[in-house]
Image (cartoon, helix red, strand yellow):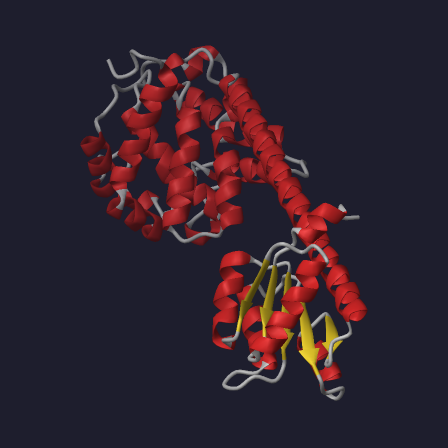
Length: 363
């Protein structure tokens, strides 16, 4: 229930083209203790007044020149279509009552006015309106708490993913921040491609797990500074299937996409990748997005077999090729999006290298 003092502070707008009716209603309401009463004789101003003041009750005459009460209610409903419409109509025509209810009115007052009826109906309507506002306020607070809790869970989830993926890379400090930058590259590229929010969200959380299978690769192969022997290369390639097995058979949409990316992120658009030599659109979209992001960051980062390249060199290799990496490796549409927006990748690399690797990261 609403406290009686709060009830009397409810905001009321009286709309009638006859000043005598307005004065009478104001006297009745003020005599009962209501202290926040506004009035207008111009129906064309009602919607704007309600938009600004969000009245707890609108006492609305139905028969007015230029714009009748039914038209006013249509305008009020357009302001907030899903909200409670706090309209108490004033009418001397019994035949209008049913039409008024269908138009959105919640109650009515008959002319000529009977003071006990006026006060009873106004009291009920103001109380109902205030309860509706309390409910909306509570729902807003609840929704905010749910959003905050969801954000906390996602943050904790991402932290868990980063911790887990570092287990595969903890021996190689040069790749430690790679898994975090990958999230931001993939999210930015997915947005540039116009992919839906669900996909963008999933790839942000799933992409850092792409190399989790490296945890099963022996150190002498994983960290080898020179060229792999054929048998070593075959062992190295198994990290994609190991990653898919580690992440597979999960109900989590993030882990499902993570497994899909882990298995396919070394497949190539031209069919020259591994483990299955998939070609074109037979490669899952998430893996195709991941491939170019992974390639860019690998080119920008120091590896046992290569120095770190600057942004311009990395873009040149991806777009023109260098024998090891070729444009034909990438989905043409994704390559075009990267080429047109490559500065975004540079910005992400510089931002998260400095932010996540400490004060000497840029040295």
